[in-house]
Length: 565
Image (cartoon, rainbow, N blue to C red):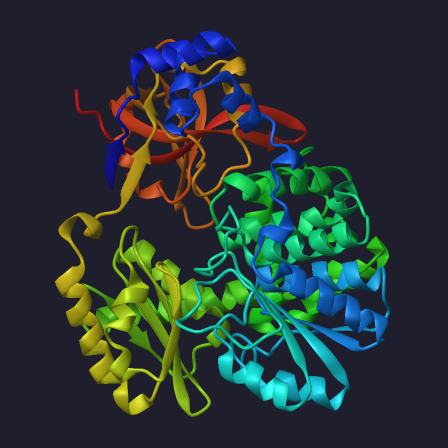
């Protein structure tokens, strides 16, 4: 792994900010690296405010969306809230449906089946809406490219409102309203909302239109925070405000479904990592292993008791998902070795029996072993379906676009995408993808990179320093957890591999004067580098360890290597 140390910002700016805030220079450096150079900017950063949220009516088509929903309510139409089967989609559906049902009873929900219908707005879903007398569909976290589907719905007398955050195509669907801050003609100031965030802006606009206060909408922000965490959107601007207040709801008065998923954990205060690693995988597991309806029902339940059965089922789905992706990962790794493909620029593996719901997870796991753009493919009906994952800095969506002649369809983002193709095209597609990546993947992208904010002395790690760092939260893209490097450390003598397979490393790092417990997930194989008090350099973030009711500061090791000097 290559360590990339950030350049230190202008010294005068750092010292001025440190003096103005009364903080250590190391903390001031971290703030300036995040573009914060004044007392007022620091105050806004440390204390996100609802006042920073923009007027929802600045979003293109918002007025039309509100007017159409109000007309549906006035005319007693049946409204269908439609969303994707992932965390962002199911949280969006739960948010919108919960809000509307508090004010109007004729609301139903629909999550497409991952396997029978696939991603996005489906004709099957529109037929279901028509058969049940739906007059208006509100689509969330999908729909901005559903041109044919919206036209199909119009022929059946069904209107569409689309709340999406994906990049639109050359044309927009002919919907009553297309709410998407990434529209080229949308002047909304913040472009990085997730699908649930766009949904929240719609209920904010509905509330404003009805004379409701923003404070009345705070109970919905636990859903928004969960979606922000799971969808890995930038933790900046409005997202940071929505996530901060959403976490406050999670900690003070969470909806019963989220409370049930968090369970009785020792932590007194939950943070974004709990949403990312505890809540989100379980919500996702419902859509991967069974159906997203389970997640929506859980998130909309109004009592903890009624949530327990749902939560237990989803926990079982998650356990099944883990076992399935571990098995498929092992099969895929064996396949790479059997086919002698260790030296390629890409990983492309296919087995018809692999579970479609976990191939994206498997692709991510394969990257941990072979650091290169990866495709995992299975059979879905009459065609092949695949998931793509990429390495830092490489646009796998663009690579797929260069191979579009071999595919039926594809879509996604820079680092994650999905696609389908005919089985007869598999070998041609595999060769084309290898060629494109081989020509465009630079040498610097073939090595895992880690960005280091600052070299730090253990003497700098005081309780005050950690308290100030904690206030940088919530963390995410654009506001990552600070990463530090410290040189010439030794282990206090009790380094040991931990975990069922010994893949993790537990040790106590010391500079001779100060010492901290450390845990390195996935670093078990590096124990030889620190045995017998051999000096080593360490990259880490600061963390709290909760054990038996006690809380202690520990280092979360990212990487370690033999000391350079």
